Length: 141
Image (tube, rainbow, N blue to C red; front, top):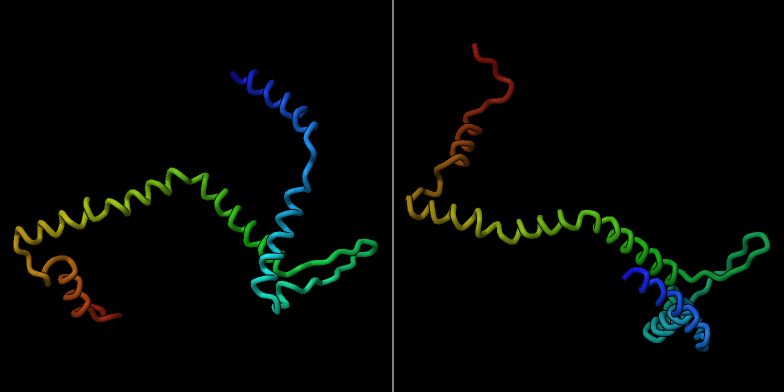
């Protein structure tokens, strides 16, 4: 099966050579993004201004909108790549959060109602009483 897939991939490279190549995708997407943003915010200097940068013999223009967009995309892609390693753990956490009302909350409420336990009783009430009687830095003799 893998040999057949490899043969198809190898043959595909020859088939692609016979087709007329279109402009590179990164250049097309760059133009499309800038055209759309410039139409939506025509007076924005953040989107429309090209900042010329010269590093010794190399000259190029930098657009702050494009730079921030690429940075945000890189951060998001990095976060997703890191999160995918813990995908099963995240699914377990989401499942626990989803089933918490059925597993913990509802049975506790049913127990409280069936046994007619008062609202001010229990561990929280005991903790409150203990904190009320506690005096800091007092030594018992």
